[in-house]
Image 1 (cartoon, rainbow, N blue to C red):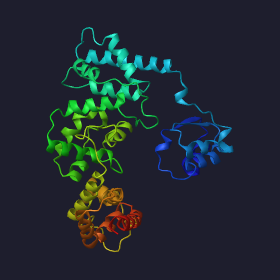
Image 2 (cartoon, helix red, strand yellow):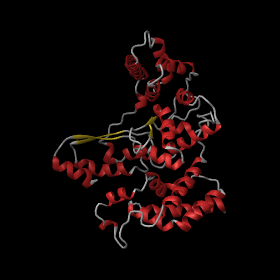
Image 3 (cartoon, rainbow, N blue to C red):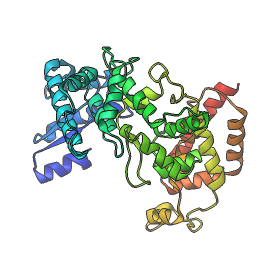
Image 4 (cartoon, helix red, strand yellow):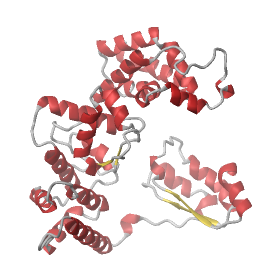
Length: 390
């Protein structure tokens, strides 16, 4: 932090604002946030800088702000203390402005939206902008009339339940019904085979340890790239879907993974992503490594340290380590240890991998600078085997 922030800012003598968004989403298992602990020690050295930090009120974060070094310098603003009328007014303005622009893009829809429709949407939003954003994304369809899609939302049951209580987990909320409406509009026909494909692709989006690209999702799940792209485009209002198929696909809000992996929220089994999909992803990772790993994939001369290889990143690019393979090498065990059931298939795949591809796996991890993952993987796998198989 001294080299990254304090030193450069002191040298430049500038005044600036640094935003740290969603601090609670950082992987930080310490009793108090390490980031806040470090900031508390250094913030007095850069008085010209202000930090704007957003977070859920997790205990290890709130306690971090109460440390003497930070408490005197911190002004806390609790979003839920904003008057509901102010929030509803903002959401009403957001809906009115967004729907007007949408109507204009479709050549003007006479008398649409009505004031009653906007009021109903505001009531359904229940003070949550995420509902408003998801609704506009859903209505903004290339080939369908937004008024027809809005009518579909109007016909869904309305809820007065408080939306999510921290992580949007409340059952049968308006947001749940909106998500379900989007799925039913995207996949109106109930075919068991198609449903399995949808769930497999969705599992690679919402359960992945790190966001995967469309190309990596296709390779990992074993489906054609065009099929995966088409499927994801049908629900693109729920995703951050980049144009480049090699860029990562992500849920546009954390409430979507929460919804689709919770059977009390996603009550339609056609779309529910069960935890056993972690086991499928682990098997897919092991299968990809079994097929693609080979000795010296990047053609680096023997006995050469990675640090001595010029343009190692370019070398990796040339040898073509696919994103799905890199993900498999780094994350197969993360899916394995979540799965609580033992199957013959996964034990067999694990045995073949460790027996035939272990050294090649270590080599790839070394080349991509992630050799430390190997120790974590082996320790976690041993623990999983003891828990599940004994």
